[in-house]
Image (cartoon, rainbow, N blue to C red; front, side):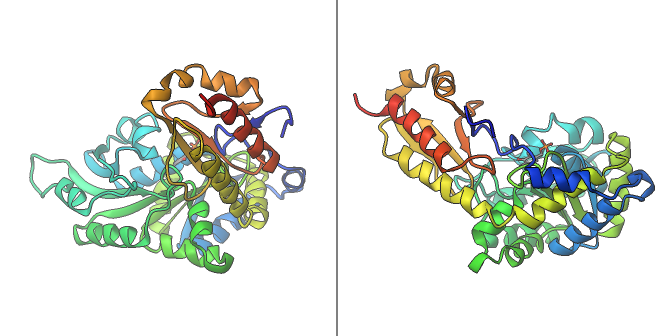
Length: 348
Ligand SMILES: *Cc1c(COP(=O)(O)O)cnc(C)c1O
């Protein structure tokens, strides 16, 4: 990282480490559209097996991964059920509707980010000519950094199955959830406990895992076969993608266990911010800290992002103040953010 600034806007801002760049430089490659890239093929097999699926497909972005999943599960005129704040619905430019002609049925979240089972059930349409065909339930974990309770995933999944709906998980930050829930550091079992409730799962290597590019969609062989056609249509058929798969492979080898450090640093931020007047800190489960500024401290919110940036701290203020920890945020960076926030909010 550049030492003049600590960038906590997102965990997407990480730069590949020297060791990761070395792995990329040495990657064995081939034309992946022909299925000829050994590094991509090995990574697909590895992630499918790791998460308990028959097959997997390497894609450039999580957005494309989710789009491929939704369009592989659904036909034109079908509908997918999704939480209001989920990435697929809110932050992917409406791709499922625009490119897939798949109607989203958004559902309001509960305060902890889950969806009420009664709300899901009420949104599933009966088989009647008036309605779009409800085909898919899409969930997200972590959601805004919150780990979804396993019993919620199990119950929502069972409900979807009872109604004949497929189940997709946007697990862009699945490994953060798995590390948070893994007992004795066993994130592999924790990841499987989550993914076992889904027919398809998308994971990102370009978030906390620190790869520059790359996501993986996992599912059955039949689903991934359909998804490969969508990926081609979306322009995501890559050629010598092994250099990217090598980065993702390196990330899986070296950057999963260390997510616990990101989570510890996020806790440190949350506890320090919670002591400052005018700040309300949302519960922190993993690597994302959301901070709301109370109405009586509102004037301190004006120009806050620029104030922090002038002190070498980049935070996200798109809709709420957000600090995200990752590979390129160390303890000194965390203390710098705390100092800058203290300067703004402590006293008077
Ligand atoms: C980042 C993210 C994605 C995909 O993002 P890309 O920038 O397209 O890789 C999908 N879902 C969630 C929850 C995300 O945070």
